[in-house]
Amino acid sequence: MNALKTTMLLAVLAAVLIFAGGAIGGRSGATVALIFAGIMNFGAYWFSDKIVLKMYRAIEVSEADVPQLYGIVKELALKAGLPMPRVCIMNNPAPNAFATGRNPSHAAVAVTTGIMELLTKEELAGVIGHELAHVRNRDTLVSTIAATIAGAISYLAHMAQWALIFGGGRRDDRGGGHPLVLILMMIVAPVAAMIIHMAISRTREYGADRDGATIVGNPRHLADALRKLEYANRRVPMVNAGETTAHLFIVNPLRGTGMLKLFSTHPPVAERIKRLEAMAEGMA
Image 1 (cartoon, rainbow, N blue to C red):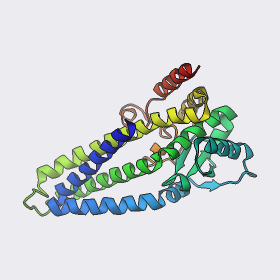
Image 2 (cartoon, rainbow, N blue to C red):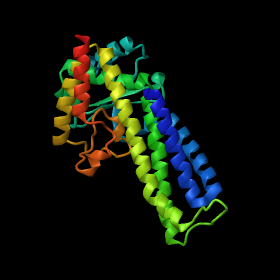
Image 3 (cartoon, rainbow, N blue to C red):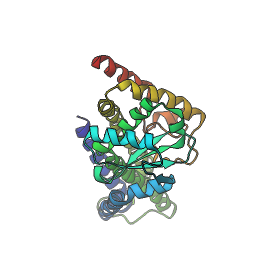
Image 4 (cartoon, rainbow, N blue to C red):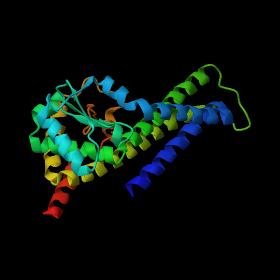
């Protein structure tokens, strides 16, 4: 069901992109938007892991560097039936973690120094299980594509703003460049993209919680980790985190308040903990 829902949401997101392109340039604009999305998705598929790891200055480490962390990843990857991913460390006091890579054979799991200091071995295993579930379900690729298309839509909305300033674009038989259409696109398209991107990310987070807990064998480990991470990230948010990559992390690295929480790419931590505890009771 999650896979079907994600596929439908990605299709709607792509349709919003085509609408945005058509609003600016009519039929030709929609075609350009499709080509633009294809190029961006190609780049996201091949290079997203390298880009995001470099963005957060994540350094690949060996078993000799961090034997406990490496051992957890190795053991859980074996249990999940996955190739051993690269293990990376981010020198950052904010406790967090993410997984990236286009497929299980090219995956990387990155954790901050803050999370290694905060969590017990069992809780860290719960986090790693969650990230490996993302890898096994190929959520890292889906999330990257969603973020890329959403970013393209936002870019087109900015183009529409400039088109209005300079008198609109060329109008064709499909109404491309019409001022009212441009205004509608500027308002609706970015919001729609944000909501759809959020829905995709939240759907995948619940699935990774469930599957990760199954890999580890005890849902309470992840539940306990999430409690600590939620509290700690309120006190020590990740200062270099970007909105386009926030969805990758196990908990939202951005300090959202008010309306920002409504558009968070992460489901409420309290609800995630509730589901994990219910799962633990069912396994007892």
